Amino acid sequence: MVNEKLSEALKEIEYFLLDMDGTVYLGDELIGEMDQTLRFLREKGKKLIFLTNNSSKSNEKYIEKLKRLNLFGEGDEVYTSGMATADMLVERYPEETVYLLGTEALKEEFKSKGVNLVENGQPDIAVLAYDTELTYEKLCKFTTAIKKGALYIATHPDVNCPAPEVFVPDIGSFMAMIELSTGLKPIEIVGKPYDGMGKALMKRFDAGNNKFIMVGDRLHTDIKFGNNCGFYSALVLSGESALDDVKKSDARPTFILDSLNDIKNYF
Ligand SMILES: [Mg+2]
Image 1 (tube, rainbow, N blue to C red):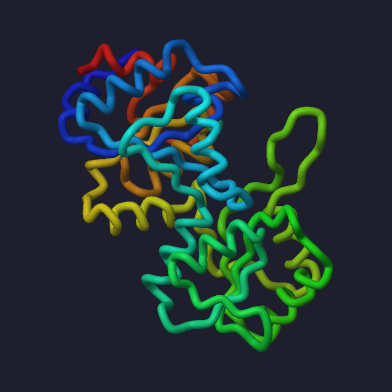
Image 2 (image 1 turned 60 degrees about the horizontal axis):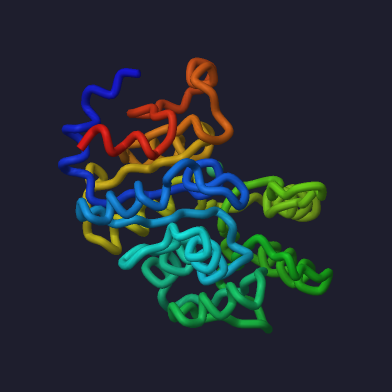
């Protein structure tokens, strides 16, 4: 595999944005000696940020799992599309009121970041998240709010949430139902492959796009996200994609690795 420029790029890259399933673990198993690889990256001074589109869980749930697998170290962070949405709202709409269709965990997250959440009355903005505690009442509040003119923002686009044995509709399915009912689509979607999470991180760390690399196993989400943000990207073949898939996709990984463990060879 041709990764001639990877060693050069690693000199300027400071932030490793890491997909989780298929990239650092598979289900409940580490991919190779990933714990040692991540430790190596930390020792090289790289900041590790685990990224997920799932806005139904708080980042603590992910941190728990990563700690259990020995993958979470000092200075690491988990950043969800829900957190990115809250950061974006505080930055761009500091005064506006927000109705959040989301889990209690996400509501707490929004409040702690200073988003002006309201339960009653017409909000300025209505945010759709992956709400695993969805009720009909919440749904009607949401459709009413956007029909009456609230800005409609969604945390991410995934249609289903991968799960063993059961079939789990994610936020993209809610969007389809809301569109059929109201005729309205979100004016903005924050999560991968859109650039919202990337913009929020660049802002937060005050860093240019050449300081970031997105590492993931999916071309149409992880690598597209890297492309859309102008970040370096590395496709790892340890999860969903095979080398052949690259030719068929319009997503363009900057680098391709059998797994993230190979990165050590380029320092
Ligand atoms: Mg993945």
